[in-house]
Length: 88
Image (cartoon, rainbow, N blue to C red; front, side, top):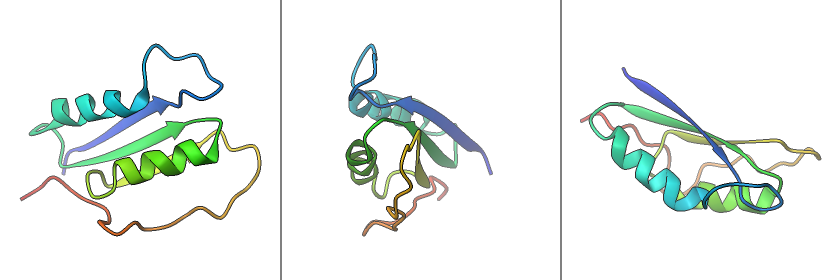
């Protein structure tokens, strides 16, 4: 199985060149046929931005892991569409 790991930076309170939301859409398109599963490490200041990215990628990647958390949270969840691998 070919596994891709993507590192993204959140945009809120951090300096980024562009929004991570359209950026990840482009990255997923580029990985089509090159990876069987995608793990996204989302480094962001705000928990809400991490949750938004999870919903944005629901059913399109294997997992979204939020990093750079200052305060422990209980945000772990499996969203309705669930994890996805790109294997047929």
